[in-house]
Image 1 (cartoon, helix red, strand yellow):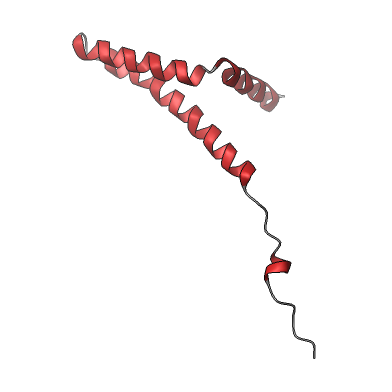
Image 2 (cartoon, helix red, strand yellow):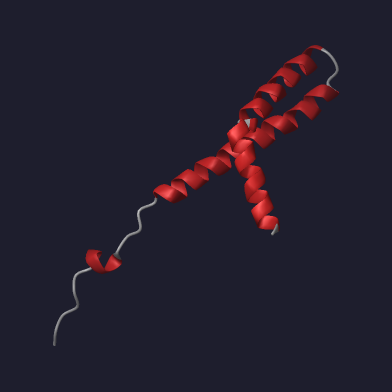
Length: 82
């Protein structure tokens, strides 16, 4: 039940492209923090990290889907007959 809810929430995040929005908002917050209060930098880094984590998860899922399973029986020669 919980896993299904998490998967649905993740699909919704991907449809809305939240990872890109988080990264852009975080970068804007860091730039503002450089010019004003330094604590804004520390708070604004978290959306960037979260957006990057979502992108990395997508990347690893894509790699896992594109892996071709090997048939080791075809790669190895047949055993010798006695």
